[in-house]
Length: 247
Image 1 (cartoon, rainbow, N blue to C red):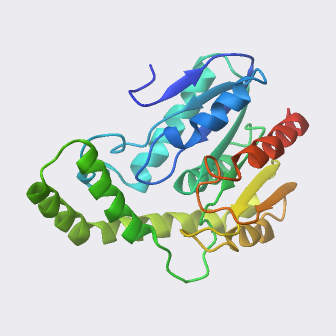
Image 2 (cartoon, rainbow, N blue to C red):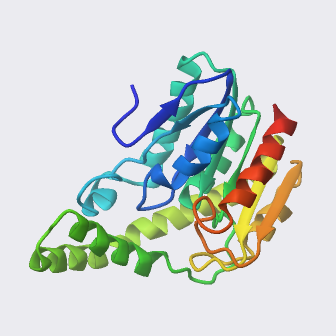
């Protein structure tokens, strides 16, 4: 059974798993999912443990790369349980790291890819930490949490987020080291005005996919969330063409 916050659109045998970004949820990929289901693809968007609640501390206390990897394994098994045998997997940002890991570990997947995903890093810091804290404030206010409580919770997040970010970095490094294991076709989408990760991240992923047929797409003037921002229509068109080739 799909968990709250997830969605599953059941159509044909060709299935696509879409993974959301850190500190966000399946809303990141809903617009893309609606476009793809019009092409008769079945779509499943799971939610990472600790996400989608009224309290951002859940992301730290309940989540970790190991837990989220199990979420993805469960998602693949969920789609298989629906009788789908042709499955691809894509993710944005954090979700892209796990999509790549899936292709490394599940050779039966027909393909996949990542959008704005910091899989291969160059040592430069990104803006994930500051953005996470700002998103927490916005989320608490959306749930009508009083300002004093928000201040206390955000201070706790500020004090406790770094170990999780280090775990994510280590996990991504492990995925990057194994990119040569991917033999399936791989789609890379990268906004060139990405404010969250280095806009050259996509180029570095491509360079390590030495055994994969790569579809590489950059979107000028597009910021991080290319599934929902000014690049989304172009991304959808590019992804549809890619899917037509791999299925």
